[in-house]
Image (cartoon, rainbow, N blue to C red):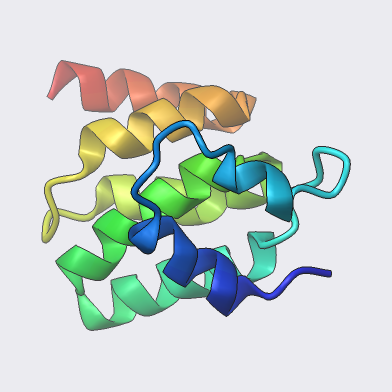
Length: 110
């Protein structure tokens, strides 16, 4: 298992967009940092930490999202303290959870 802290720090220190940085933290396409990313999202919600949320959503996107992210992303989508609703919608599209459809529909209409 790779070190999440090294992964997270390296994302923001990498200067070469073609260095395939993410590949060195891949384990056969598995979302190896999922639990820590979801925990960070929960912490961002509790603290209403906008900058942290922006960074954590970017890391989630790079690491890949799946059904385990649905609940936390839907919770974030309903909250008004941040401005990352479009990013969350894009991640929910990747998740492809049928339970998100009604909420995405309502969000599109509002």
